[in-house]
Image (cartoon, rainbow, N blue to C red; front, top):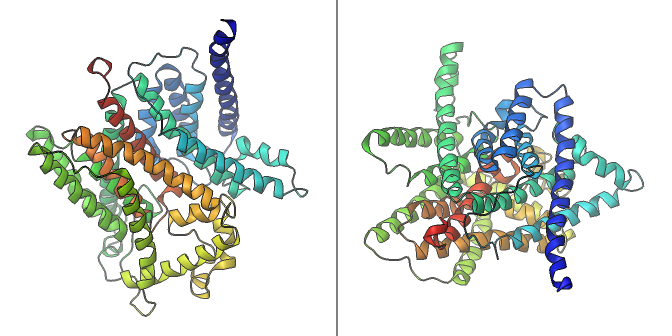
Length: 492
């Protein structure tokens, strides 16, 4: 009797200890933020507000982070990591919350949390290998000390530490959103709505910024540079236009079911779609155009099928996984169809450049195929493996294919776990849409997340935290919604 009861009494203490340890690390990082002269006072005030909300109502604090995170680059100048400061404030406040809220719904997390945690473990191992290899020049303790003190307020003297912490924050955000959905069953739909509307507002800001800049400066070149033959590319809320495109597409697809509202509100949603198209054109992201068109076609076909009372095709997730891998390999290999002789800025020339990035990644991966070259080291080491063509242009650069970047840095093991994580989440959403074909929000989440992942074949939006946060909360919200729909009506 005593031996059976003992594990139950120890478990809460173990969880509380882990929670307080995480809170300690996060609070040290936030203290460094507060005392840094680089951080503006109003960002500190925002972080304090998010922290207080997380102590009071974590679900509300998460929604605030979802709304504010895409604007991180506008909140503070480099090297301050504004979006991650808000994310850490949310997690710290939630961790120190003494009163734990009981679950209000059955939300089984088996099969969707394990892969994410396993991937996080590989990231920690990869980081540890790099940290140990730096001895005796720098001790392991020195590197450990930089994790809380240096990450949020500088670009980081250790790029591999910054990359590892970002990945771990993504995992924590995904798992945290799932956990909060147990306590707040309405949270998944609110998260998806927030990602959709905040993305449309970001697109509107990009469009409106051009005429405002012209009116305030009188420089017509600000308008002209978007319409000439070798036009510029731009986005108001993100410097990386290749990350802005996936963010727009995710928001646009997620907004489709919410736009089916009474007539007055529909006008605003349609205006939002108009500015979304313009902002997407301004970003110049061809991959986002293609992925968005495919996602829209799938959503429309599935929606029409559901309207006729028909279920989605009974396709096994194993078959879908094989198809996904074939598509991933085919899209990656399609870069070899490019040619350097094409005109500057053309799609064919862009493919040729990405073919050289593909060659760079494969050369680097070959040096350590199982464990990878180390988390966060791709950029610094890329110059060693680049062909002369892109070395002359970039010098150092990321892979322009996030899947290859993960495979190169974390090896076959990390790459397999990353695909397992994504695959398990998408499979859960797919099964949910088969059982509940009339739930347009769940279908939109599946289409939006899949389209976003397609753009990662030619880009790396996950390296931009302002574009990564909307995806990870959307993925978790989609999984939670699929599982909640299967729960008894009383639990929802």
